[in-house]
Length: 116
Image 1 (cartoon, rainbow, N blue to C red):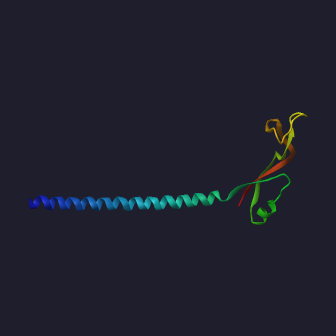
Image 2: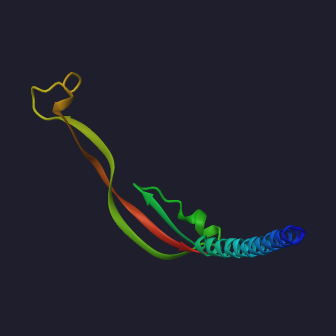
Image 3: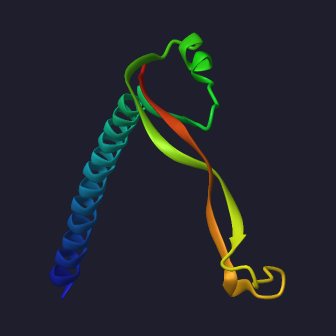
């Protein structure tokens, strides 16, 4: 009976020792993966897309901070909208179903791809 108790205690100690070793290895893997993610984030921070629309332009601030324009293109964009009545007898204040919204001013949106 004493041999059985000693054997069970030894077995229990071995289980604890092997489980601690596995946890230690997992902590190392977690640390390594966090380091890799931070390196990937640093790479991602070196590229940026900036959009300016309807006559706005603030690209000089980025250029002064060390960013370089890699690519630039322009798209057409609606700057403002206006509401008109669908027919002459329509009262837009009372009847919301006869109100039509159409583009008022159409401008250009400049898209800059920047790299640092």
